[in-house]
Image (cartoon, rainbow over all chains, first blue to last red; front, side):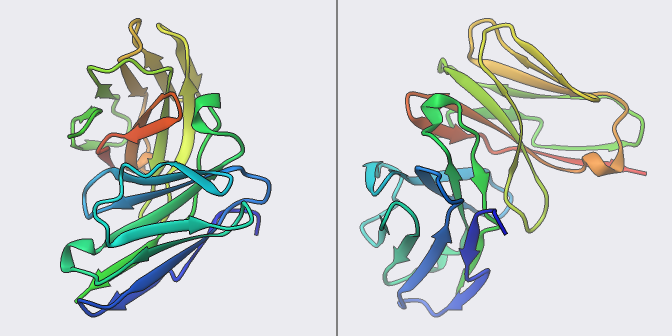
Length: 116
Length: 109
């Protein structure tokens, strides 16, 4: 498919374990975004990549969260020492240009993370 | 702190009714986007409004961007069950896009 792909679709982990979430953006899209959506809530901005660099990391909730993007394509979001409050749907989106150019975001279906 | 306030938070109506949902902010945006999200899926873009006072129509949906580019509204005429979903507005400034908490719409047949 030509859309944004996220894996795994569901992840259940024990408190204290590390998790890695993966996002495959649409080919050719230069910008990539991570958002978090808690039950009944809107989208909380986490981090934005333009190419491989992340000019805006302001949304990462704590130093347990990190993200990288390699080759201007795949991105991974890593959460260390997971806590129950980390339980949420993690959404990835990509756009052809940065949002300042009014490029629409194309979202994946998300990874539902449950920390027990 | 939510930069964008959406109202109402929940809305349940009968098929055929009209409705308006609102997206308000104290910040000025270069553009504003509306998305619809269905359960288990990511949000899908409906429209982008750029110019203050702009009105865009998408079949039964009418989007308006406020003159000061701080707020927006979405009006749906003759709502159908297929319109059910979470409607999210997103404000764009520089290279920053922030979302509101959404309006969860249910249209009953």
